[in-house]
Amino acid sequence: MADTGSNGTAALPQMHVVAQYTRDLSFENPNAPRSLAPQSTAPSISIEVNVNVNQLAETEFDVTLVMEGKAGEGADLLFSFELAYGGLFRILNVPMEQMHPFVMIECPRMLFPFARQIVADAVRGGGFPPLYIDPIDFMALYQQKAAEAAASGAGQTLS
Image (cartoon, rainbow, N blue to C red; front, side, top):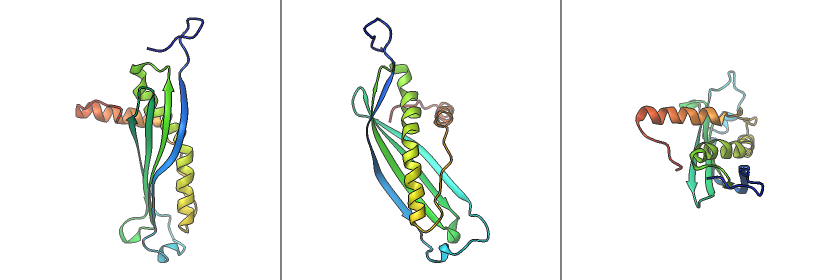
């Protein structure tokens, strides 16, 4: 139940970013220096994004945005990366029935710009033009995961 303010109205939801951190970062350029030669065609780029949540206390959540990607395939692989970028969030005045979508949508939305920059810097440091990942609609991602969970008969939890 949401707390009420001094005038008897419901207090507004609050989200505090307590900390942000890189949990894990890996960049591979397995075919260097051959991969750094000018390419005649643009490589295929694939990116996978996941969100993991660990509830630490009643109002504190450890949220990790996991991004994995690669450019090229097999022997033509130019680079690959993995990033786990986390944040510690304190969330107040959000009803329990709304906590799961709030944490799974709003927290990664706050983390994304920082994770995007880390990936761009890692790719640039590997000798390639920076890879700026397009903005992600975390609400659509949440709805997709919820639909997949419903189809498989599994419920979503905060983990």
